[in-house]
Structures are given as C-alpha cells and as structure tokens.
Length: 298
Image 1 (spheres, rainbow, N blue to C red):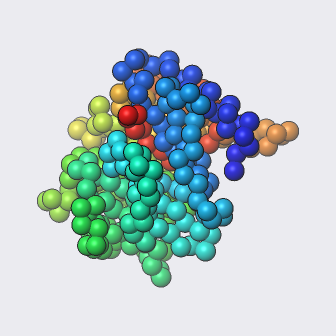
Image 2: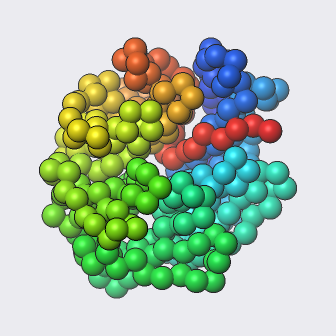
C-alpha cells in the first residue's frame, strides 16, 4: 500500500497534469489501480486531487483489471493469493458494489452490455460471455476458449495483468491465440482474421485512427497496427511501458515506466504520450498505473 505522502504527491502531479489539457477535458478523471487492493480516482476539479473509491477488506487481494461500462459504472476483478477471483460492479453515483461473476479480467464491449471475463480451469483458461442486463446467463465463449491451453501467451498475459481481449468495434475483438498470432474476431459473423503479428499482446485501441497497440512478449517493443490498412509502426517512447490507458478526448495514452536505481531500487512513474506530437511528459513520480479507465466526472 502506498505511503500517505506518496499518495498526496501522486495526487498533486496527476491533477496538475490533467489541468494542462483543454477545458473540454476538465471533467475527466482517471480511475485506476496500482495492482494492490485499492482503486483510486482523480480529476482537476477534485479539491483533494485523489480519492480512494474502494479498498478491499482482504489486504492480500489484488485488483488487476478495470473495465468501463459507462460514465457511472465500471467493473473490476479482485483475486486472492489462493486464486479465488470475482468480478464486481462499482456504481460511482451511489458507491454501491455488486458481485457479478466468479472470474477475472473483465472486458466490456461498446454496447455497454456484453461482458467477457476469464476463469482458470484445470489445464486451460476459459473465456465466458454474459450480459449485464441478464447476469444469470453465462456461457463459455468457445471460439476463443478452444484456442488456449496451459502455457498459452494469453495465460502469460493474465499473470502480468494485461488486458488481452480488446474491443475494436461494436462486434469485434482482438486477442492472441496459443501460437502467438494476433487475431481479430468478428462476433456477429463468426469470422477470424489473422493480423500477421507474432507474439504481440494487445493492450489498448486508439479509436481516433483505429490503431491497435500491442507489446512484444519478449522484448517489450510497442507496435501500432492500423486495422484499416494493417500498416505497422513502432512507438519508441512506449517501449518497456505498462498499464496503458487511452484518453480519447486528448488522443493520448497514460502509462507506467519502471526505473532502476542502485541506491533506491525499483521506482515506477506515470507518464503520458500524445500521439499527434509524439511527445511524452511526466504525470506522477513514484506512482504505478497497473490498470485504469477514463470516466466523466458528474
């Protein structure tokens, strides 16, 4: 758990950064977890800079993934060290929390209703699909589950808390199969398309240009793949980064970087990268962004 002084420093840094954007983004906030048992939120309009939304009563539990439903609600997973995982829904307006499913790593489609999440079976990782309007109905999503088994890249991705099922359209998702191929799956048409990129774990989608960002599992090289013409380029300033959160209004991505120092040891800081200018800037020193979402502040 972060020390109080560090939390305050992070709050000030993030708030200062967000206030540097245009007035149109003043009501946006970053809701995030550092990979601990706590979820935070921040916004320029917040007097305290940062607020704790939720802290698990189980101190040893970890929260690895947040998924936005709408500007009022989001999903998050919570796992204990024994491997018991659950998916919860958090209501920003009421502060209420509801347990939805047994599983982890939720992903919500753009219809704000269809949700995917994972469960660890005996020798495989199973993907399930449900509807937030009909939560009692939960089905194994066979088109993807059949492609994964023990030692799959998807399992490696899950260990590191990376979101590896990425919505890239109303009925389309991108994922990595057991051989390391990056695939695009059209749910409504039941069609799979290979993107000819090997060993690259997808982590976010740039909506403005329909570019998919993925990270090489061996070298940490970040690639940007245009899903319209499949043109691929590298983004040098994002190499070796983690915890990526895309902010569509400012067309930027927030991310965490690990620095090693012989005296102080490992240190993480949060930066931003603006796609249009190619510039990166420090957002918050001594802070870790493991998973997060951008929400509108009411």
